[in-house]
Amino acid sequence: MARAATTTDAFNAVAEPRRRQILDVLAAGERPVNDLVAQLGLAQPLVSKHLRVLRQVGLVEVREEGRQRLYRLNGHPLKPIHDWVKNYERSWSQRFDRLDAVLAELKEKEQAGEGRNE
Amino acid sequence: MARAATTTDAFNAVAEPRRRQILDVLAAGERPVNDLVAQLGLAQPLVSKHLRVLRQVGLVEVREEGRQRLYRLNGHPLKPIHDWVKNYERSWSQRFDRLDAVLAELKEKEQAGEGRNE
DNA sequence: TTGACATATGTCTATATGAGTATATGATCC
DNA sequence: GGATCATATACTCATATAGACATATGTCAA
Image 1 (tube, each protein chain N blue to C red):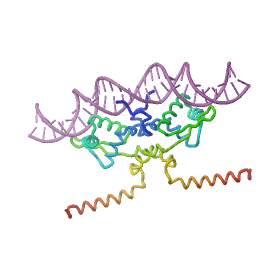
Image 2 (image 1 turned 135 degrees about the vertical axis):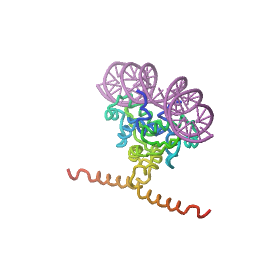
Image 3 (image 1 turned 60 degrees about the vertical axis):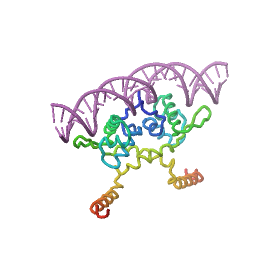
Image 4 (image 1 turned 90 degrees about the horizontal axis):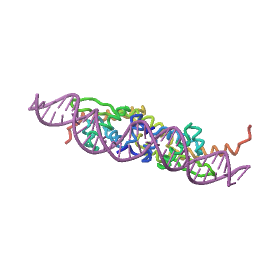
């Protein structure tokens, strides 16, 4: 079996850095394709293809206005990524250091008193 | 050009759901390969290959003990993912609703007063 | 040393990709 | 209608995959 399609979910869609860049630009507001082409310095067909992937996973939405197509961000599909990665935050964040220390102390006490009841 | 290698960075490594599963199991603590094979119900060579990818991006580390290899989690490479996706949290979190409203008001006032100075 | 166990690696296949280039679609303006 | 602009699609290529399977490597035990 090959790798899962980029359009499978946000995890796969966003693994490509160009697509993250596109979302970063769109975070500032709605943009026509040509703006993205200019800002990212990519070939226009390439941008259109990346936008298609992003559309398919729901990360962007389109609105037609004359001959332009205005793309806008929809961050909702990113939530699962956030939810998953959040659980690993303690791996790097100092915010959890104190909490971890407290938990370690508790565990120590628990083990010291082990075997007293049952 | 093909898709970026899965070993390019954490974004690509973690796009594969099996690899996320492996990390989830390892989050509970160090585990030998066979434990992962049993818990995930995957073929052993497949698990070894996924572990290799995870090793190459630094998401797991190995320790040899007899004939076993004990893998443990290292969440640090996930930080860039967290940092990137965090900026989109307002897209789905209600926590930012009030803040957004305030900002919108500010912007409105700003536009109302536009053109007065310079 | 023979064998069982734990893990890694090699080979094969089907498949999807990102990028480049050319072209199609569709709207606007003259 | 014809020209031009904005965007999407089609076709090509080189490449890397996930999984299945067979096998190699290395460790321990009898």
